[in-house]
Structures are given as C-alpha cells and as structure tokens.
Image (cartoon, rainbow, N blue to C red; front, top):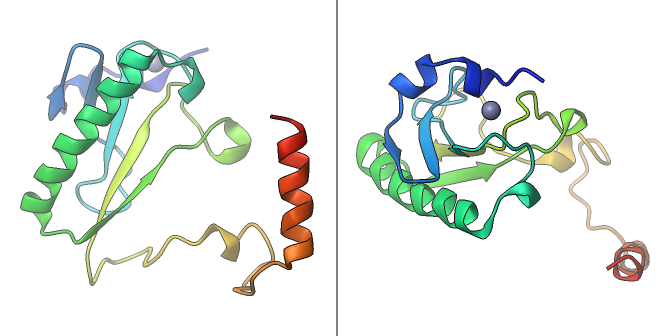
Length: 143
Ligand SMILES: [Zn+2]
C-alpha cells in the first residue's frame, strides 16, 4: 500500500524535531495552526506494531513538541489523538499521533466530543450502570 507520509518527501522538509526512531512535522491539513503529527520512522500502521523503543521515541517527541507549541501559540490545552483503520478515520496507513494545540477563540472545532456524532447523537446523558456493567463484562471476558 502506498504511504503518503513515506512517499511525500515534503513532509521531511517540515520536520520540527526528530530522534533516532521518530519525527514530527506540521500536517498538511491542520485543524488549527500548529497541528503536528508525530510518527515512527518505520512504516507501520498501528500503535501495537510499534516497538517499546518506538513508543518511547514518539512520546519523547510529544513532550518536546508540546513545550514548543505552548511557547509558539500560547495554547492552553491539547487534543492528542490517533485513528486506527479506515473505519475510524485513518487515511494514511502509517501510525501518527495528532497533537492539536488549543486556545480560547479557536476557529472551527471548539471542542472534541465523539459522543455528539457517533453514539446517541447530541446526548450528554450518562449511560445506565446496567449498560456500562454489561459492556465491562464483555470486555473483561475477552482480556
Ligand atoms: Zn509510511
């Protein structure tokens, strides 16, 4: 499968920080200015595919990038996210962690609340304890 991150060498021109196993660069379709992707240099699609060393390398860069984003954009918070598989919105099959700096007055997305668009549209009600216990039971049976 063609990987847009490995194919597009312009991404490497935008690298802001890297270490031996991972690198970080601004995404081509930022949600807000400063939206950064952090990814392993090795092309693998899922977090579970990363070695412990690669996981540490990604999180080491996350700390550095967030410090820089606070200084650069005066952001007060972050969204951290990765999508896994196409059904969850992963369009590039190379694991990448989104770091999205957030501050008051952001245009576009003002919050991140998957429940508003995936499950029980518009509802902020708590699920019943009975429903949650059933879900917990199913998961525990499969650990
Ligand atoms: Zn790749």
